Length: 386
Ligand SMILES: Cc1cc2nc3c(=O)[nH]c(=O)nc-3n(C[C@H](O)[C@H](O)[C@H](O)COP(=O)(O)O)c2cc1C
Image 1 (cartoon, rainbow, N blue to C red):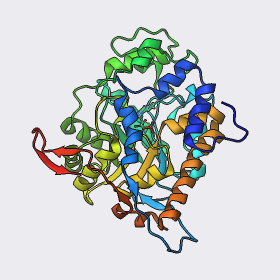
Image 2 (image 1 turned 180 degrees about the vertical axis):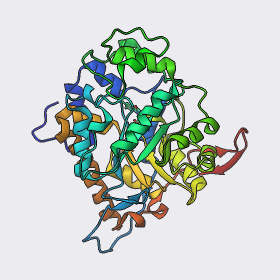
Image 3 (image 1 turned 30 degrees about the vertical axis):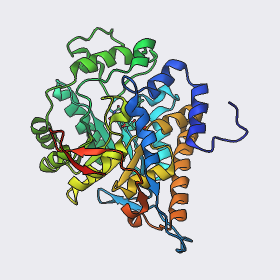
């Protein structure tokens, strides 16, 4: 579909990106695990939370400024870590980083970025956080952490929902492999070549690397052996990404995490979980004031950002919308995606009578129909109907 103007909302951007990208790369970005129930539910579930606006308040001056990990940010809207931005555009993560710097929210860089982490940080930009996967060869992960710390990243985001890769049927059907010219630039060839099962040549690319990493993830990682290890190699705050329950939130507190990201990996890992917006309230309740709670999954409107903030998230991240923007027009397109969401957030704030991020609390959302029941851990006994 052709438009006379730039896309004006995220679903326009999605359609345009789909028309531009090679179908295999599009499907890799788009896909969720198995039946994609969770992927779809993440977006749909926002509809069950209605806004509860207040009128006749002076909204002539509003601000989305906030603090995250004690540092000022111009907006709570940030970029979630996603692999291989160069699949969307040759400037890849650098373009995304410039877009994030212009918008002023946090950018989380994926371990599997196609631009080396040292090249990504923009002067005067937002906070950058480094996402981490842990390998059986912990020295490989340790090197990434140390490099991130000296490059100026402000936190380590440990992804905890991927001890093994989810089954993405579309990618399996397509036998998707990244194009040979792409490099996962955070890794040394020698490092990967020394991992068991490596079968690539001297100049291996994404495909061979991907299989090797998949086979060498540390499946024995646990709260007890993972967080203290990470703590011993870095003084950066540790954020656990992929928390979906009150129970794991309490463990994150116990192990000294500075924050958790409520996330189900955009529905790409375990299919059939709650939508993240439905999981958020129990995490916020368990977190209290002990750690910061962030959020991602299915955000396609500024009003979705508003709802997540109202339910207690301190920052809200998006992945696919930014990738669609990148595919559309590189840095300009990624910025367009963030600008659309930012301006929709500001519009929602004004139309709901909120002027500051701190004012957006639970009283601004309303869940008219009780949709799910919370069960006591390990039982089928309902404990709360939300
Ligand atoms: C193409 C793609 C690649 C991703 N790569 C990573 C990754 O390398 N590390 C990670 O922790 N999460 C990764 N994610 C998950 C995102 O960080 C995020 O949790 C999720 O996609 C947010 O949902 P949204 O895409 O609906 O905004 C990826 C997501 C996508 C779509």
